[in-house]
Each structure stands twice: as C-alpha cells, then as structure tokens.
Length: 313
Image: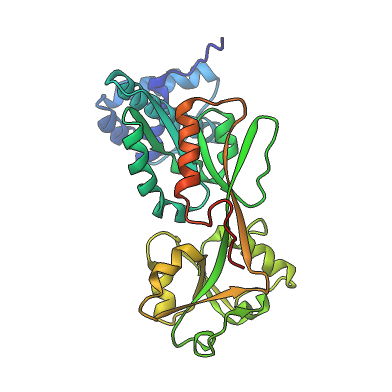
C-alpha cells in the first residue's frame, strides 16, 4: 500500500492557492490564518524537497513540480467529492450509483426522458452524469470512474471494454430558408461545397476522427471559408443558420423537430452522407442487473432507427 507524503489538507491548500493566487486569500477561503497556511506550505515543500511556488510580489506562481501536484490535487479532490456524494446516497438508502457519460453533448437533449423512465424502474439507483469524462470515456471506464459511456466514431472494443451497437447517426448541414441550397431545394451537396461556407461548429467536429473533419480531409483538405467555434448545446447553432449568418452541421434527429416553420432546411453532405456509429461502452465482464437495465434503456430511448428498422440514407 502506498504511503504518500501529501495529505488531503495539502491538496486543499494547492487547489486554493491556484484558484486565488495568494496566501492571504487562500487562508480566508480555507478558514485558516495566513501563518498556519504558510507553515503547511513550507512543510509540504520540505517533505517533497523543493519549492512548489515562485514568489512574485504578492502572488504565488506554480513551479513545474507545483503544477504537476496541483493538477493531481484537482483530480483527487474531484473524485473524492463524487465518492462522498455516492456514499451519502447509499447511507440514505440508495441501492447504488451508475456513472454515465457521452462523447456528444447533443445526447443530453434526449437523456432526460431516458433517466425519468429509468428512475421509475430503479428508484433507489442514483444516476450521475459525468461530463468531464466526455473527452476520454474509455480511460475513465478503465479507471473505474465511469460505468457507462455513449461513444461514437473510431473507438474500438478491447479485451477490457465491451461495446454494444446502438444506432447510425446522420449529420446534416443546416441552412436558413434564404440560403441558395434551400432556395434550390437541394437535398445533397458535395463536401467541397463547404469550402464556400461560414460554418458554426465545435473543435471536435473538425478533427479527422470525426465524420465532418474526415470528409473535409478526404475531399482534398477542404476548409470552410470561415469557421466560428461555439458550444453545440442549446439553440445557438440553429439560430445562426436561421439568421443566415452561416451554416451548421448537426444530427438529423436533433434538427427535424425544428423544421416545421420552414425557416430551416437540411442537406445531406456528400452522396452517402456523414454518419456516426453509436455504441454503448462498458467494462467487460460486468453484468450487474442495474447496468444491464440501463444499457437496455439506451437501446429503447435513443433517437436513431431501432434495431430491425432501415436507417435513412
């Protein structure tokens, strides 16, 4: 069993110092005197054998060693807070906790209905959405900090990860009613056509591991004439298209409910379209009833075509 030199009080100290930048402010935050906090910092630096901060006027600036330890402090304190919250739920009578993440923030638009129905069948089970895990869900699963991940694209199963297919998700270009594609009632455009457009999207969509980024690269490294990076949650991307300030690319299921008033028009990108293969990732060998029930709920509630139905396109 490891016996680290760093204690929880030191982690709280490092986190507070990074946040506020001075001993006096950190002391107020932690309800300690500045002298007591200074003594803790000296004690920690003595234990580790060197400085963790440079003193610059009235501020403390992290050294490289201090940065490494402070990054670890944030991670450890975050995980400890989650564990404490789950422990409190168990002590109040909950039957367990299920930690869930998705790599696509658009999924949070249909998860609430799933969670509502699931909670009726499993009233004692606490379901936590772990948004921090969206960038690397497989790593979080393997670290046992996550139980279920909705994944897409090039993620592949391994000996320790089990994948259950969900649905194919088509991404379509969305334009306003005055856009030339809408006026011409275009149903399909070539990928190269995006080179003449102002595209509102997020950085992840332009990576070569994502359908849009991969299609642009395969079309000869096409780049939109302008890209504005924005969060794809909420209605902002659609409002930009509606106002004829550019176009966006979104899942067809997310856009379809917004097409009723004719202000928006969807267009397939490329003759075969842009597609994501969605799946549920869990740790191999784990088959607890609540986990299996949640995976089955995902199969029932996802917005794509159900198993046995033909996908559009």
